Length: 203
Image (cartoon, rainbow, N blue to C red; front, top):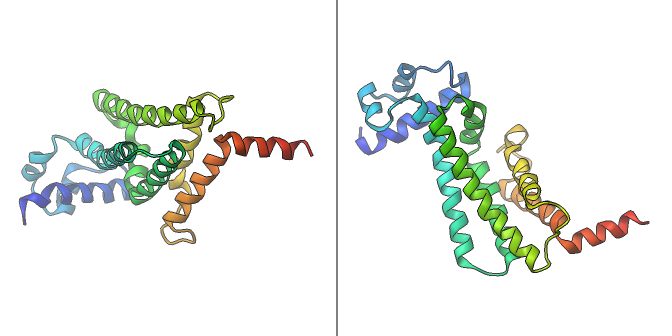
């Protein structure tokens, strides 16, 4: 067994056990047995079961933030940037659907310092996303009659709800879902789309 694989083995085993029987009822002994490692090997990488729960979500959070930074750095029209970010966050959330499901179900059990760290990092992502929306508002592309915080919450509530209904077996692929949710969101926040909706309401 290569030592470089120990952390991944333990993380995968913990994810499967947390998903099947719950975080609170899963013991460290069960995790190391499922991973095929010793407790000493596990503790070389993770100080506690809390660290494992954090690590499960950290992989997804770090990847999404890196993608966000890369998309923003590449530049382009703000509408295209927002579209690319939205598609990416839906697709990566689906890729990490088990991780997200386990974490959001059990995050309240994290110790306060870890919970604060997660909250802060999620806020940083949301703040960068909100800054993109503000650019679009400044250019007259996005509606300004709704607070940006509500626009951000509107989109990410759809993302966080994916685990309640999405199935990798179909009928929609992750790319289709990402494109559809993104289109629905952008139509709801664009000034042009809002004007069309307002005109339809008048008939």
